[in-house]
Length: 257
Image (cartoon, rainbow, N blue to C red; front, side):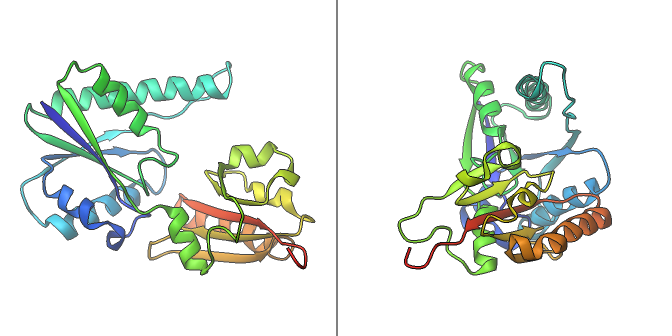
């Protein structure tokens, strides 16, 4: 039987790995890394290699790198685009496991943050395990999420007394009624959808490259920091060629609430 570990690597810095994750690294024979196209891909791979070097040194493990499939928009819409993309990615995982992992060996994927939060790798691997007829099993090693690091860096609680918290996507925030957002963490926002929330008595707590040496933080009323936030996002993306960011939108409470 082959075993695959999905290891949450936290937001990027080696110090954010849990002890469980570090101990799991030591049991892995082959690490699979997917290389994205475009500027910045070398830095994204290097962060994973830095983790391996820090905790494993030059011990006996292999790294297999493959090109990550590009998501191409299809005329059938967003959901069909994502479905086709995931099919291609699942086929890639299947090929790598078949060709690069021997029976009795363990492989691993180092995944940003926690594997369960807005990362469909868990679903893809689970489908491969179901179809393997007992030849493959997998285990999820939880990681520290960017949500936790965001609130820690801004020194705020995730939710206020008696209040719920929503975790959603930039795609949702881009199209929803602004009035429905009260306390929400927004991930995967490529279009700076927070700019829709001016005049809404909203505060924003934004972080880019959280847990990394180039970490950037911006916070304050959306109306006051909008220009700074837009320029900061544009500047750092241009400098590095990539940007991983997350933010919390929080509606200010009335007096006495």
